[in-house]
Structures are given as structure tokens and as C-alpha cells.
Amino acid sequence: MVELAVSPAHRRLRDRLHRVTRFDLLPTPAVQRAFADHHTTGDPVAERFVAETYHGELGPERSRELLDEALRVGVDNVPGAPESMRALFAEFESVPDWLEPDLVERGAAVWRRWAYSLGAVGNAGTMDTYTEASLAVPLSLSGGYAGASALHRYLETSRWWLEVCRPGAVLTPGSTARELSLKVRVMHVSVRARVAEHPEWNTAEHGLPISQSEMMLTLLGGSVGPALGLFSLGFLTSPAEMRAVLHFNRYLGHLVGCQVDDMYPATVADGVRLLYFFDATRKHDSGPLGAELVEGFVPSFAPDDSVRGPARLRANYHLLLQAGYTRLFMLPWNRRRYRLPSGLPGLAVLIGRAPLVAVVELARRLSPAIDRRWQDGQVRRWRRWHAWHLGHREERFDAGKQLRR
Image 1 (tube, rainbow, N blue to C red):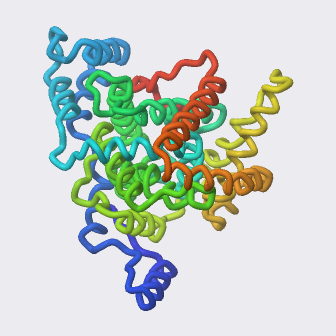
Image 2 (image 1 turned 60 degrees about the horizontal axis):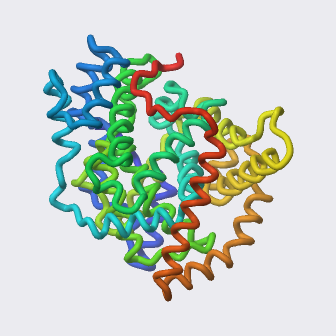
Image 3 (image 1 turned 120 degrees about the horizontal axis):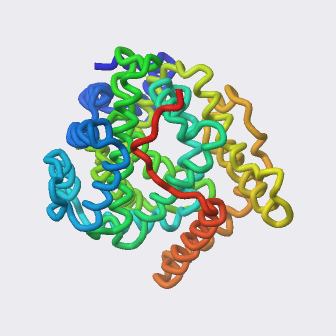
């Protein structure tokens, strides 16, 4: 088990708040133990498939073709499909007994309202976690969010976000959302295996790379975190909608191989406790790798020297916005560790338009038609931005990619 210790400052804050409000900022001892235990838990079913195929005799290219074929025609129609692939598809296509389809759909609708802001606040929050070597080392070694590739990796993740929040997408067999989810799962497993064998990875200190506990943190970063944080930007998410988006993320976790039923939060308050526990047990051990990831992300939005005219203005606008989100959603004492753009101009834009967002958010509660138009407009603008930035590049979710060092 990975050792996690709550810092004295966090324990004092928890004790003071508990005395006044009776609300405990820390999860129960059982959840704390589960969170520590799951740092050593991976995804055994998908790991067997990747070891046999991508990292085995078939190799990455043939394995990718085999996976694409199974996704297209069904694994039962693939002659000679290995048993590990059949087991992976059986687990992927299983329906959890806790699943409530209506809640999933309501949670997806919340993502459609948040749209571009979901990705921006999620990445600002993720950058805040790069103080931790357990998160920074896999990302630095794989190179996804390092240097010039950071923007493309973000666009790749944005594509997945855009697909899974389509109405009905994650519950529809054969959908692009489900296809990409399985590819994300396989990619994570491939990176986990390679990083675990790398000399820079400290198994005794950190357990497994991309562990179940760390994957669960990303689910909270797509539910509880933005649900609370985006209030400051005018997005008025109700308690019922928060519970729905929490359930939606739980099902996304099922699709990408994150199965932590023994500690997944049942309420928003439980989600807050887990986020606080993560913050309280930080080790601040990422060193220069954390700085590499944080300081490379926002500047990756800057336009190339060859970009001129309106396109340059558009790129610089999004650069300012992304910097603004980091100013608002990174903890100030963590943000000060890194060299980042000021963020004040972008923050001014975000705060300035918050009242307008709040007006629409209030209006959508009175009219289902306004709610639909708000969702559609938000997603349309998000897709337009994504397509403009992506250009002719291809999203691969590449499980065969080697580590960069």
C-alpha cells in the first residue's frame, strides 16, 4: 500500500471546520484506506490484452487493426480474436447494476452546457496536480502534455469529451464515444506498463502509474470540481445536476477501466472530501517534471510566427482565456511555483461575461427550449474551436507509442 499522510495544516483546518459546522472535510478511514490501496491497482483485464497483443508478438500496428476490426464488426465476428480481447470486450460491454440511464443522460447534458469551460477548468485543475511525481512522471515520459505536443494531446482529449457528451452516445453500442473510450483505456494500459518498467518510476513510493485512484481523480475533475468552480463564471449547476454529472462520470470511468465502486463518491460532499484528501496528502515531489508540464501547456496555445490576421487574434484570445482559467482554478500557492502568463486579462474576460452566463442559466430553468438552444450553442462553439485548432492533424489515441526517453 502507498503511504499517504495528511499534512498538519490540512488536519488543523479540518478540525476547525468540523468544530464549527460538524462537516468533516476528510473521508472516512475506510475510504482513505481504499484510496491508498488503489494506488497499486490497475486494469487486469485490459492489461492482459495489451501484454498479449500491443506488447506481444502481434505488435502495435496489427493489434490496432485487430481492435479497429472488433469495434467495427463485433469481437465475435473477428476470426482468431485472442481470448484476452474477448474478455476485454465482455467487461467493456457489461452493464453495471448501479447504472441509471436517465442520470447518465442528464449528466451528459451538464457537460454540453459547460462545453469549452469544462475542458479549460479541467486542465487548470489538472495542472494544479502536477506537484505530484505520481502524476507528472507518466505524462512527462509519454510526452503527451510536454512541450509542443501539449496542445495536440489536449485536442485529442477534447475530442473524447465532445463525443461522450453527445445525446445518447455513451449508451449506444457501436458509437464513436464508446469506440474512443475503449481506445483511451487501451492507451492508458500501454503507457502504464511502459512507465512501470522505467527507471524514473518509483513503485515503492507511488504504486502503479495511472492507478485506479488517480483515474478516479480525473472523474472528480469532470464532475464535482467544475460543478462547484464554474459557479464563479455564472454556470448555475443545481445539486440534482451535480449528482447526475457525478453518475455520468462514474459510467465514463467504467468505460475507460476505472472501477472503484468501494470508494467512488455517492454524494457531492463525498467528492469534496476525496479532493481535499488528495490535496492534504500531496508529496510535492515532481520537481522539474511538474514545471515542464505546467509551463508548457498554456504557451502551446500561442500562434506560430506564420499565423497572421484574424487567425492570430483568435489564437491569442484563447491563449489569454487559458491563462485566465489557470489564474482562477489553480491554487495560488501552487501556481506561484511556476512561470506562467499573468492570466489577468483572460480572468477579466471570464469574470466580465459571468453575469451574462448566469442570466442564460436562469432562463434555461424556465424554458426547456432555451435549455436545448443553450446546450446546442455551447457545443457548436466548442466543436468549431476544436476543428479550427486541430486542422489536418489526426487524433490517434495511440497505444503503440514509445516513451520519449
